[in-house]
Image 1 (cartoon, rainbow, N blue to C red):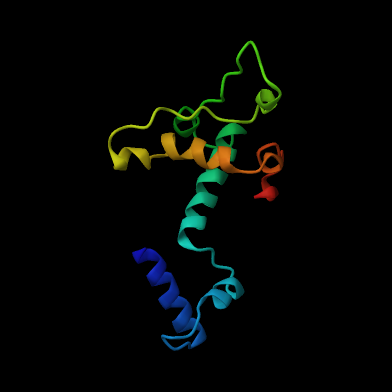
Image 2: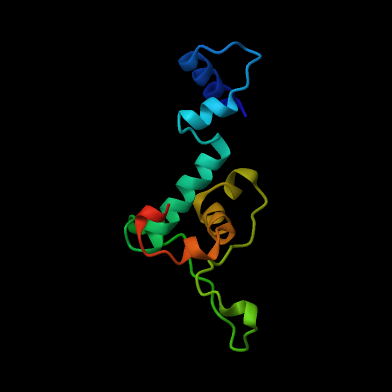
Length: 121
């Protein structure tokens, strides 16, 4: 929340806006993503790189592709899902790459998860 306020202040400064002016259209004009979406974008891109052997091994070791059960349903045909580890008790650990990357990746549309080129992101 604090970082989003700083980003909004920067846009106000860049475009000479007053405090009561809406910042949203100017964020889009400056090609700024809101902070939460920017974090999700970076985590998703790093996960893509891990799955395609473009990231360091220590990051790639943090994520695992979901195992397919022997008896499958039609909804289980998505082979591009990641295994989400059991959530720990600490909030700080929950935000680590090992836990947030599978959640962000599994929320992406199927077309993005199956994309073979980096430019899709």
